[in-house]
Image 1 (cartoon, rainbow, N blue to C red):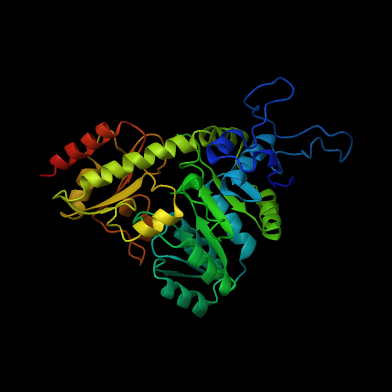
Image 2: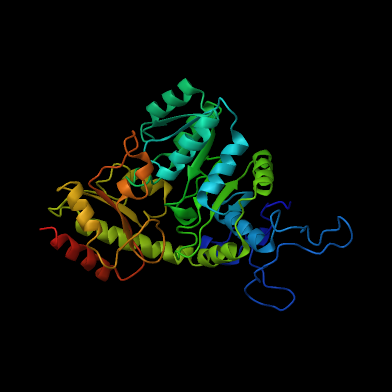
Length: 394
């Protein structure tokens, strides 16, 4: 089992976009290939019993392609260790196994990805973990909840999914650490290009690499980035012992996507801001949730802790659930599908799609809400698509 410590110190101090292309991506010394090869192998020949070549023995414990991705991820999040998994939920599951035991408590926001809540509520709670949710933008409420429950983990998601709430990472890290809790930030919506949770005091960053990091809707994966050596060793052992690793082709596709992350996120962000501004005040729309709008309650905080505001936004409709559903099914360029963060624009109806598992709970999503993952197509074409769909509602 190899260490995932980032070792490419030659890139220290270089710009994010440069590290996204070069971290973990040294050319192949045998052929000079600019793109490192994909190591499609399950096992490695040893130089005698126990004589591992480069530390490799079996692909579950380590694979050069996965190691390259992990070095890339560590560099971009400013972390010492990174681990790549078969999915975002596999990453979350591994982290929670590493830090929790029966009787421990988890506090998370009341507006998190439904799959994260489902994982803890339906897998870990029957195992003996307890769970509560709180409004993460209310720091006093978080402080009280963490103190009252003796929380072992404070789970933060910002921007949140799908209400686009902005939580103060630095303040929450201070609250969590004062109570002895591990502070975890799901950075999927922002990506490391827009937001650096470890630099703001978080202990662990989690990603669904399926989304903006992969960026092309062609790979499923997850990742953890950690600074603490002891926790990293626990996670590394479980990655090996449980085996929910990313395969070499999945790792390579994710790495390929990351190389264009900076330019893609710039376009996602500019497109989403233009669309949000254009839709504010439309008579069919009750609310536009996008932190780039000055009217958003988290706008000033997002301006401080994010480089830009990302490609995700949500709309609530005056006409209620029926109108929201009709709109979600009326667009053309915005394709009706789950997931997000790809180059193509997607639209979803969270209450029956991504967040169906939390219907009837305190985390349920408003039934008049649709979520947009704004892609990198022409913003004029995207806006025309949305306005044409809005016209059909009249």
